[in-house]
Length: 155
Image (cartoon, rainbow, N blue to C red; front, side):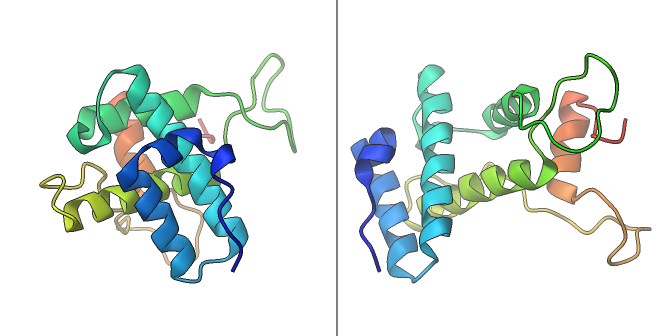
């Protein structure tokens, strides 16, 4: 197990709770790449909530929806087919899911440690009518896209 390079995650290192959470993930034996991805995701999330002047322990569903919207509007890597001339690449659905997973797990920790009463990030749900293994959008992103009227990659 290697040590976490805290200089890569200054906001995580600055927050006692965030630092403890990331350290716990490492101590649980998660792969180094996973811990680093969690660190980057948590750093990004803490930067977002700090810009709004809100503590992570005070975040509600509206702030999570705003965070999802900011992720959906952020440019991503250019890859594969161009959908239309002038279209901008977006973060992939897998990246969005991973970023929200980090936030959900961090808030699970905050609830367990009794620093907040509930987790503002909803759990993904099975989408009825879609057979297992078929192309479908996961419930979590669908929920936030519906709230924010964000088009999916297929629109």
